[in-house]
Image (cartoon, rainbow, N blue to C red; front, side):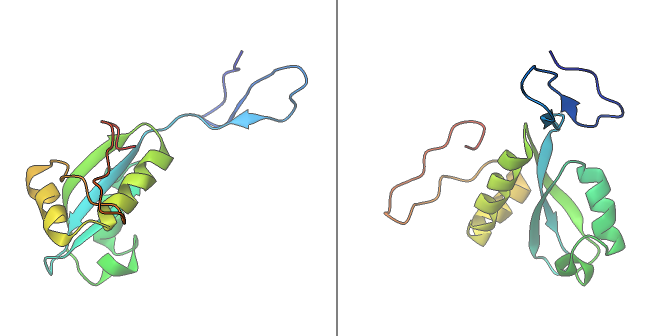
Length: 128
């Protein structure tokens, strides 16, 4: 039912009664963690972490890392969708610094954080 698109652009469903509905192609997204020259960690997401690292190194990716170069990529994790990656980025940004450092060293997910009610959050393997 989907029609091939040109150059990875949106795909039209081509269904009768649904005009102009277009879907963007599924693109995986990544969460990444950088270690800056001053020892701080920076978390972000991108569909192309290698390109994004080059932007950080050039000082064009973010104001935070511009003054803390050089930066080193210490952690990446792939997600099926951009929204999953953005959710994980926010979760990582809320972690204590010790858990972020553990991620950068071990590459393992830190233990679940506590919710505002004091209960541990339970997440499945995809981080949802």
